[in-house]
Image (cartoon, rainbow, N blue to C red; front, side, top):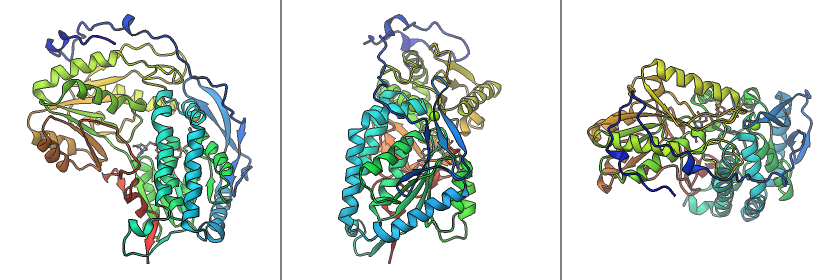
Length: 503
Ligand code: NAP
Ligand code: MG
């Protein structure tokens, strides 16, 4: 481990000049530690998982899923058309009426427990595939995504036969068929957030994964078969946005659960207006991470790093706006820049890697446009000096200082390893800046004072506020946004509401 350098914090932060930074290169060279891929089997081509079987798509069209770290093709994935979605919904309706809603609740619970245990048993395989298909560091898929996905199934399995305790005095029934659409940043985990509560409450499912990251959902389909889950209870239809819109438009679906961008969320909300479908929308964010002068600065710097560089910043609740109290701003920024220099960017399958590949070419281009825009808007850019691999889509950890609240890099969700840094003097100013975006998903507050945590936390219009930590997730804890960050909550007891109705 590196000794903490105490000189560096005394140096004033000069945003526009490249200061004499320490070079960590030699000290931070690790031997390669690649995770093995020998044990992984990926088919050349995947059909649609409908009614317990993999079937060919009606129009016979397939698209490629690539590994964004080396641009190699991993598999061909079926594109579901309207007819395919119809078939999936029919299978889900049938399964709902004939088997799933007829099963005793504790029997449903057993299947969900079995799914949870199978995810644990196959955790290594799922982690490696998640990393290959989506570009996230293996350390994260291994230690966060996959264990949390299993934990969601364990947690909701427990609720299956206890709904009368979740909603005392109320008679609860399931809705029917749930249509679920998920993004590419946490593929299996987002699937777990959707499928676990739906099954526990007695609904059946038609789920569409994101186009660039379908593989773990298809592996999950295999796992449902291995678990002996009755046919048609879970159906996986792959495809692009069009496939998603066929799900949203379908008349025989009772509930839409969507996680993705605010832009698509708005389209879905318009489509559903006036129908009797229930919906939950988990949308974008631009999380404020607020550091007060009395915060434990070294921990806060770790928290800033975790908040924005976890999963390449492809995180809806990322702490992408740093708000730091003026008196400690230089110190925090200097320490942050030093810490950024130690981040290892590169092969996602290497266990040392901190920042993996950007999920797709499209996202890579979008992030680069924002980097140019930030400079055009007059901000000062600092990027770590990490060497990037020659192939694949990689982006250097980046911070922008000298930004204005009205800048687009401060207002827009970039969804990449890009942090904007602003300062504030009083708590009130910090709160006002934190709230001054259309989003309200999550944020962080760092201070030594419990009273400040409560006061600031209560005044930030965010669904989640972490104190002296960031990006902590737990299946028992509800998650969701205010304002343009969404409608409804997922996770915890709250996550059951979206899938039940009361008699
Ligand atoms: P996206 O473009 O909105 O896509 C999300 C999903 O919707 C994908 O499966 C996508 O298919 C599908 N889709 C696209 N257009 C559609 C349409 N017109 N009708 C129905 N479905 C459609 O978002 P993304 O870029 O994949 O994901 C990033 C976004 O998700 C960010 O804004 C992030 O903040 C948000 N997110 C929110 C949460 C939360 O809990 N609040 C969690 C994770 C991510 P394709 O993949 O084929 O385009
Ligand atoms: Mg892929």
